[in-house]
Length: 152
Image (cartoon, rainbow, N blue to C red; front, side, top):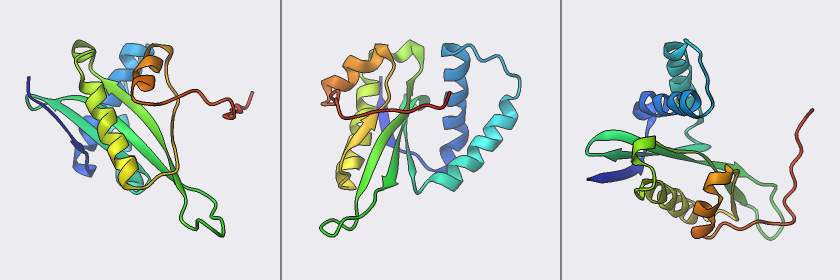
């Protein structure tokens, strides 16, 4: 099994959109019939957001196998640090038949290598229960100061 993980480009948007569609239909039971319209919208969204949402694509023997995203946000500057940025890991997904084979770890390592390269202050992730240990293995920790608000 030849695994390749690389930074994705706008040309990869249809493959990334296909993975996003697959995740929603398989894991969340989405039953929409608008796949083509979604892929078109997703391709435009990717092109418009490449400066803030950095996609990574995993391929196994040349076939699309997974994705992960690093969202990069500018933070309010301080007098001592005028170029502050943070990141958020988003939409990590590996096709079901290849889970637990190390592909997710390779995707996450690519994301975190990019975060290091960009000198991000911190990187967060909103995880499913199943994946918490996966993120903890690479150094993510619970933070008692992190609070979340959701509209009702």
